[in-house]
Length: 304
Image (cartoon, rainbow, N blue to C red; front, side):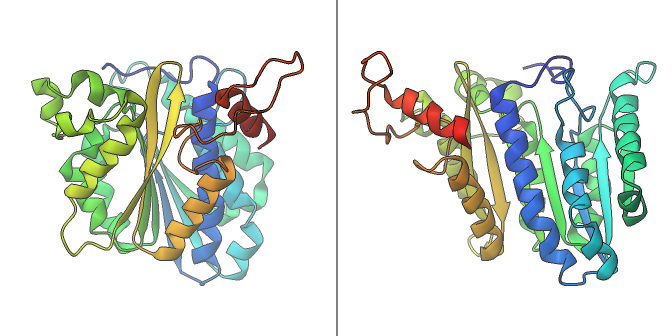
């Protein structure tokens, strides 16, 4: 369950799908508050990475900046301040390579987009999320906020994060969760210290549904009168199942996310593969062989 250096190699297709969903939601979210003339809005990326993978594919911070840049005219027109909070934690203070690369990537992007440089404020952090989150929580609660928790693991689903975000009525959030960990490690004490679920219930269905079932367990932890709505998007990576948990209180925010999800997968809007075996299976390949449901789904994903 150790952390991986996800940017020391090219992003795989599952990671790119996740980043594109993050990016698409930022594109939908930003103008909502800018066009309202809100004085300030905040975007938080607690696991920002370096900005690019080794092949130059954009990571979440550059994708965020790109989407703000597409609205920069409206930002000036409505006199809105956008503050972007980017955190990349490296415990070894002597080797801050990834943190420095993050700052360099953003600086280079801003120099190439001078109007954007004047329109936003970027705050960089090199802190453990467990310590940084409570420091920034007052800002999240005070302002319209978009929060990304792109963790490699599960511990930030614990109540000290999840239930605090539930209290923020103008905050939308997207968690990335390594859902396979629940299947493999949920009975370990170290795991239970962060998040306890009904493992028997979560494993009632086949492994491919573990992310959806984790979300069901999350919903059980919400206060009875909560207005927060939660939706999953399952990501298959090799033999592993990961996923995004989206949360928002406003119906229009929910509609935006579901529109993005269904655009990516017209079969069911909830996974980057045919999780419910919905695809028709009667078509043939070029060689006369019957296409599998997965073949047909892969074709749809390629066209998106």
